[in-house]
Image (tube, rainbow, N blue to C red; front, side, top):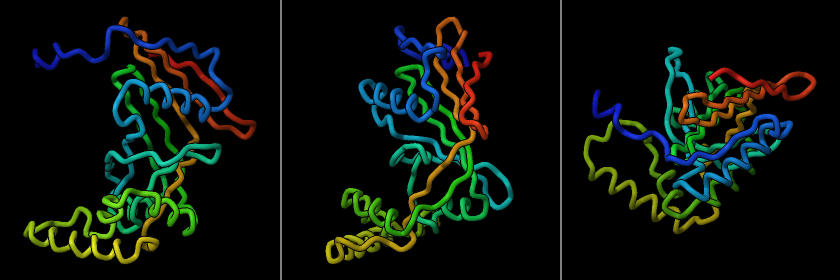
Length: 212
């Protein structure tokens, strides 16, 4: 534990965040932070997607953000994957972005809805070839008894993608998280972290400064 406490958490210089000048809605601020993070850190679009399983136990994994706009934040996966099955049973999720190189975190949560089949297919066909092959391999999170089975499935998937470059799996789905709460967190070395929460109401977004 002594060694763990000795590791630095953030760089010496941190960006300044002034909540009073934040835009009226969270999407604009998120895009600003995401763009800024992209100038300093790897994979700024990586996000932890949290869902709950059939027993109500939390589950989380890192995925890639596909888009963000007035309608919400988009991620994609197979509807038959563990996360897809969990979202089918309980269509709510949380997303967590963490950029330690900037001392920033964004958290949001809300209901989730699938995009149309056309939009989901467009999402899949925009993926790099290796990513499309991976999706066609299937069996995600199942027990792999023999690595040779993976090699055979990958070869078959590569053949299929090469012969059908314009075909997307019917199960591939883009999901849209439409948050009712979005929080922006800026680290401070004096531990007086700056937190700004956007809360959705019938009249629009309410901005609230939170205690650290």
